Image (cartoon, rainbow, N blue to C red; front, side, top):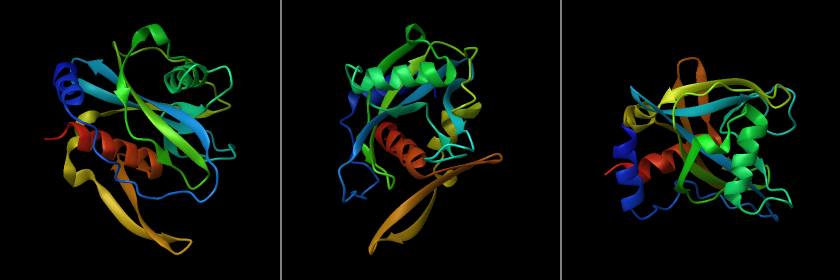
Length: 190
């Protein structure tokens, strides 16, 4: 999918409700992530990271750059952009923000808002190895192909919910990241 096709679909549609229905019973901490779509000659690529293995939350999981809201962040967009710069050196002036997806509640007590942005072209990254073990790109088309979606039903605290997966090469993209990608796909697929 090209940048122009993506923008036409993303901007003309009303946001769909999230595939995720889990509601956390405790007060949540606010966070934001950047769904960065890299504009390449071969179509849009989704930027993903593998989190460092020593982290307290979601160690070694595949994620988007992002993190918790700090007092000095003016908005959720500012949080997502700041975290992307801190984690992988992605500069704000290379990103055009196109919108947000519905917030997602995690089992670990965060309400995460996905911020969607287009990155002009592939960038050189400056990875913070204290937070990120790896940076990689996946063609957006991989997530648009419905046969790549996997769902497993799970029960937590007596409530049943779906856990989403997107296998890609040797990566297992699952949980919050997979649901946000599924929500993005649901929003632009018609």
